[in-house]
Amino acid sequence: MLRKMNCLVIGLAALSVSACTSNPSKQDVGMVTGAVVGGVVGSSLTYGSTAGTVAGAVAGGYVGKLVGKEMERK
Image (tube, rainbow, N blue to C red; front, side, top):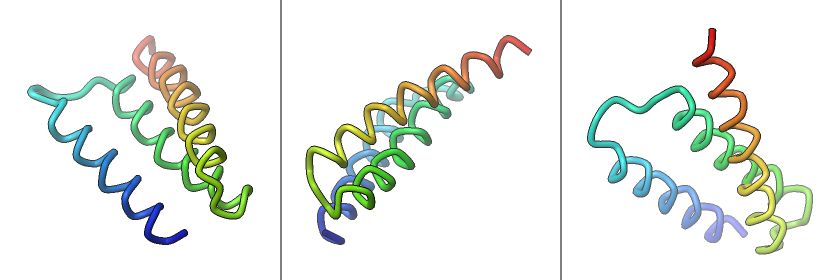
């Protein structure tokens, strides 16, 4: 389980670093942060299930994007 989580975190970090050629918006930061947190929570709740980790990352990314979008409006 720990190995899967490490691969997920490293993969998301690599994607976030390579995708940012300029300063990321609050929406981008919220999406990446939400995906990482959601993946960890999904993995924890499903005892390391890959489907749970992916579902948590997708849900967390979506919620993080919405929160970041709302923060940009203010």
